Image (cartoon, rainbow, N blue to C red; front, side):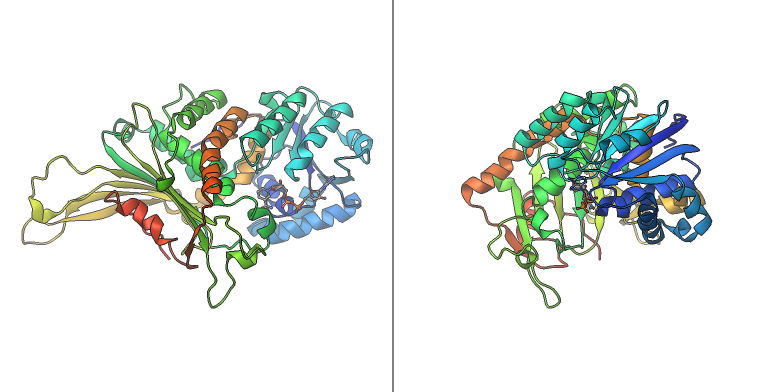
Length: 484
Ligand code: NAD
């Protein structure tokens, strides 16, 4: 999908939390790569703002290190790094006090796009928004970017939305879900709405079910104290998996513009039925010979937070009535695999007789690894001796299909930050979407609490708890394998 590039003459991007982990690993290296790709206007400036006391030179040194470590192939190019660093500055700012604000204001220029990235704890969003206005740094044209987690339930998300709305219009607020910045996720829309082939079949009449899997191999070690207050439902399902569900299930928007797309996504969330607790499986990974289990990682031997969730849900509308959607995500699983699989129904009648077996078309959209798509089609098994059928994949790995251009595909953060600068909100969550998603997940989480639910243990490196397999087996279906 060729993105429309809106020319921007220059920008001032302030990264609150510029010394933090996210800025170091994602935001700053992402900006560097866009700079290398020639997509950053000449007049761009990036200002780190955080609690640490340091000057421009010291901050540039930390940025240089981040680029070397996370900047990709060009990270080692000193001339490029030097040219990028000329655009980088730093201001010591206290989000909750008076320090640094006047000075930061003095650095900002008139006549260029102003964007403020809140890469700090959500508890600071209100203080930042308030000071951006009261110190006169932000105006009605400025943009603010906020990171997940966007609340921990409907109530906190509403409060956060209300706080931001006191100072900024919805058109100025960019809520990041980095899944929406992934090439394949956008490709979902291109595949669905750019081809005649799929859309006529994209409904309950032809689709048996849809599976969405986001499997991770990492543990929660190192971020246990945050994770244990969240769990897989809040950390992954409420945002990333639901966004994928929306894109796969939504009606075609009238055009590819922010509100048209987000209106359709919102309708999907609102059409989701409440989930019966028998249709949800929670899991928690155990220890193995090489490393401790979840409870040790979060330093709470009685923790009942889930590191895995699988669930079955239904969308009550004309398109999807009767087609279940199965979602699963977890830590410490067999491999790092994210994919959406659209499993089509059997052909209505087999002319080849029972010995040919049943075969189903599956369209698998891989988000990682090897972003791409595979369409399973049924053909005749080669050779003599009657009509035996076999499934073969029509495989398209973007990196192969698109050749060297695919290597230029920007990482999710790069794309999203540049969309902020261009003023394109299509790939950002609107406030009402976030609230609707919480309104759907909150009762599931509340039900666990009410029933004193304890997650099922699962082995590290597995596909999750047995009960998750049963969730599908009961329906005569099975999960696609998480390949090692
Ligand atoms: P971090 O703890 O590494 O960094 C926090 C940053 O905030 C630091 O630069 C610190 O100086 C600054 N800060 C803290 N208090 C401040 C104050 N009073 N005034 C000014 N600056 C202050 O955090 P992080 O991992 O970079 O995460 C930042 C945000 O992004 C959080 O909301 C987090 O949930 C979210 N997030 C992080 C990741 C990740 O991979 N790290 C992924 C997704 C979302």
